[in-house]
Image 1 (cartoon, rainbow, N blue to C red):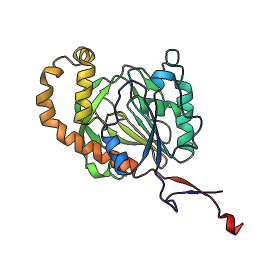
Image 2 (image 1 turned 45 degrees about the vertical axis):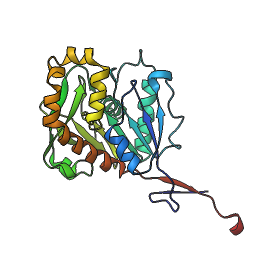
Image 3 (image 1 turned 120 degrees about the vertical axis):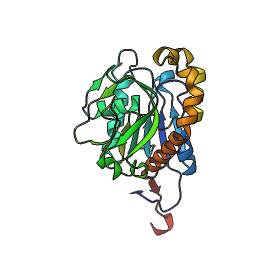
Length: 258
């Protein structure tokens, strides 16, 4: 067998493992970008059974989604230490990795940074500033100096050693970072397009009313003001990350030439 990285000699779909830390999280804009690329998605619903990929060989990329727990809740979510190790193995192998919200905190933990619990509370559509490094980075280069996107988090993290800060906000200094070629963490929910936000509104009204008083009542106005721009930014980010996935192809040598 010959293993080759990059553009395969015969077209095989890219294989993406998605870790769902909380029920009905939703891929939103990321689902659209993966579908455009013809990707095969394998879901690992660890909130249900704690089952993770056995190793990194079966997938070309890893996505770790958000959730209500913290990235340090090992006692109540015992799969977390193994997910931290798995995330690091994918990254160290040069594969594309994406951590969103809780996923970014898990990714930061995997690379030795600190999780700062309860230190950065944001909910709803907010403005994000792109750093100079971010404006030159493939993930955010199409968005200019700032963009609006959906946030839902209370925790944040210190910047991992060797990581490049790509975006920031007044509440959370590390809104996006990159490690190596294609390991990315985003504190913001770029995948949360208008459809996902509507789903969250319907599914978690009590939680939203508690953490963001008045948001439900003003949602329609806020969506009309920010939704379209956030959807466009989120899809641009999703497409940019998907474009960085390198497929690993297995080629069988011809028996006739043996």
